[in-house]
Length: 162
Image (cartoon, rainbow, N blue to C red):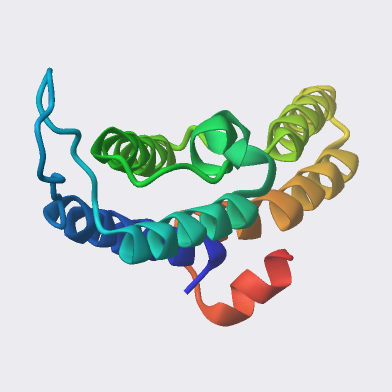
């Protein structure tokens, strides 16, 4: 399983853990003017939040948008647990939509599209060998990365892509 698949599985487990945290809701007894506050069990809440911080470190720079929500130590209020669960679902959705791409991948895509255009130009000008060499270089670099991204290749090809 590639890194993206591991992260997807980890997010799925964290969301399931979040459901268990939310199910541990309790309210203190006593007289409250506007009703008692709602909390979740602190031990499982803190364990879950710690694992959420681990997810942030796994995401690296892609986790920056969720750092303000998942990074700080917070009280075990029900609202905070619900916000954390919402952040996890947002990460899952962003990953599913392919929005967590690296800047490096965007730069490489642009560079290789430029190289492809050069190869196409050379081909149209009759420089078949030069065009083939450039096109081969583009394919050798880009194809393994695409296969690894879309999980359509063997382990051997994935290790070659790195």
